[in-house]
Length: 329
Image (cartoon, rainbow, N blue to C red):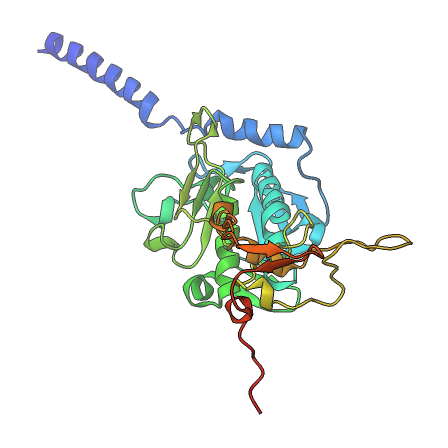
């Protein structure tokens, strides 16, 4: 019996040893995350300030954490503060700064005439699964690579809140939130806002997850798909807006606008500038083709030439005189 037990004992020991290597080995964080942090710092995409302070490495639990985390209280050198202090990695801080500069602040100035001075956030680093669902995939929040935006505060104190203004705000507030959501899709690889799913009804989630590459760049997830609304005011190129199109008018009834010159100058001295009134262009658009106005040949008139050379038509004067418009007395 002893001889039979030994082989089984050896096999069991080998199985336990191999199992121990796979079960108890600590999970490893994907290498690209640390590489992205290092590259961001090497390129000096952010800098340490009173608002962006380096923190100690976060190592676990599990694969959660950051090698070079930062405690952030404001962006754009303090111009846009947070409602709290959040832990983020370097790439996320750089992307948020770019988004504020290129998208958020221009949209706020165009819509409200005021800059954004505060972001109401709902979270940054948190070692958890997506949407806090048990058994779900690990969230980008677990690596300080995601940020949740609940609203904005303008310089005049006005709050633009996503849970309230996304669908119930005034026209400009709704348009502003659509502007910043659509613009975020060019700066981040994941953007989820109200309508994406039931978990994002009150905030916009942005992150820099690695979804793979395409021929045109990194693959991006942007939900819902939105287009920026037209921004009021003069266009960004500085040129004036085109004039409104006049309604069709009869040029004969249009009159002569003050300051407009309709004929060439005759006489000594410099000629004034000849400006055709705008009403002309509206009327000219209504003129039928030239063939509709082809001259009609006059009917031949019979008569005789007097000795003094005058032409005397045939018939009585009433045949060619126009009827009088003077009433009889």
